[in-house]
Image (cartoon, rainbow, N blue to C red; front, side):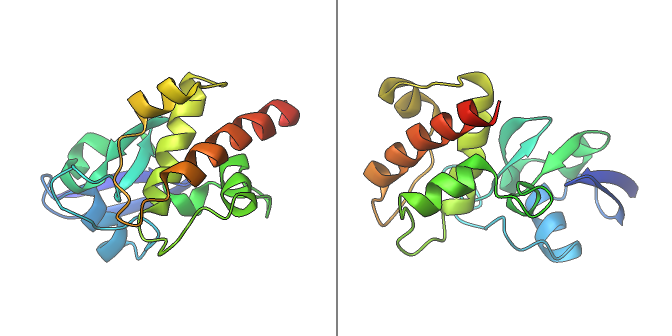
Length: 155
C-alpha cells in the first residue's frame, strides 16, 4: 500500500505493507542508516527516533502509524550545517565508545529535553531507558546536562 511520510522535513512515498516496522522502511527503503537495528523488540532503544517530537522505538512501530506525522531521525537533527545542542554535547563530553546505540540515546535525549528542559539525574534515569553495552551512562548523563545548558544559551 502506498503511504506518504515526512521524514526530516522531506516528503517520501513508500509502497509497503502497513505493518512494516518504521525502522525497516527508513533504513532499507529510504537508505537513512543513522537509526540502528538493535534487538527488534523495542527493548534496547537503538532504533529510537522522533514522531511528532516523541521518542518512538521504531523497530516495533508500524509505518502506518507514522503516516501524516513528522518523523525525525538522527540525520535530521542538524539544521543549516549547525549541530543540534545534543549532538554538540555528545562531542564535547566524548560520549561514544563503540557508538552503535548513540543515535537512539541522542534522539531519546531530544525528546526528554523537549518535555523537561533542565532535567535532574532522576529525570534522566526515569526517561532515558535505552541500553548501552559499553556502559557510557556516566558520560551520557554529563552530556544531557550539557545539552540542557546549550539549549538555554540558544534561546
